[in-house]
Image (cartoon, rainbow, N blue to C red; front, top):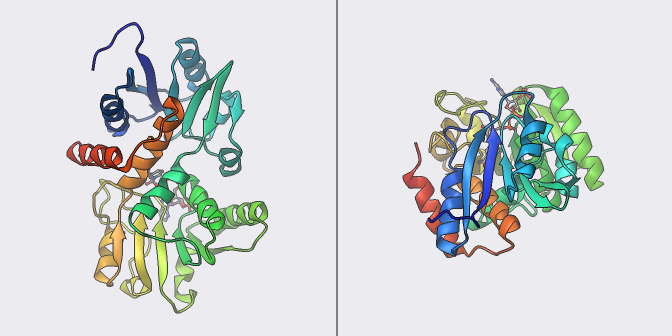
Length: 287
Ligand code: NAP
């Protein structure tokens, strides 16, 4: 990579950012595709998001990714917001426009591409969604908009699941999302489900944690998708496999949310061949 007077800069704002794999995604793509672009992480302290976005714009940054804990807070600093990101209430990608940044949510489409690449279908499926936080909310929109038959949203705090369900159902004009408490899993219909793990439980270093430990529950899951990718195999994934199902982690979701952001910044379409080269590089850099 040669940095010169024409090099464009993109970056990630969040806290923490030290272990991010996003620079691997974007710098590998820039190398492969011959774009004069560099991507760096920026640690932003609490209450300084607005300043950071203004500063990025003043420094002529082409685009930014936004990670925890600023995906909602950043919305107040945008010039414009994509309608889907607005519905989800979270932005993870800023694209430079005249006078400010436009915010997008590429997490949801990233998950869709990741599932599609593994041959996992949403249309017509009965889905168990664990969690009702920022990520699970986006997943609920994805499932509803891609034609899921039913989504049982199980969360520790039922009010949160109720709020998210109401909002998504209203936006979609359906009753597809059904809120439940985690402990109510025993009353799920007796059939086979696609299950998406969208809580932060099981994330390193708490690798033995899982929201539902009962092995019976996992007998109902034909495919489990955990949004977590560290550890490589979560306890949730382990239990799904033990119950006879297939299990996937969230690294491909991370890959594709990055690829979609890269496509927005550089107005290109990234091939599957390049996507897989980036994926291999991410796995090499995986801690
Ligand atoms: P969040 O907004 O903080 O939501 C956390 C969720 O986890 C809530 O549903 C919360 O339930 C639940 N939870 C937390 N501790 C719990 C416990 N001890 N028992 C039961 N439930 C618990 O977080 P988020 O932004 O949605 O992220 C969730 C996960 O998705 C994170 O691990 C993140 O790394 C992952 N993620 C991955 C990608 C990717 O690209 N692969 C992208 C985005 C997020 P309550 O509502 O009851 O608090």
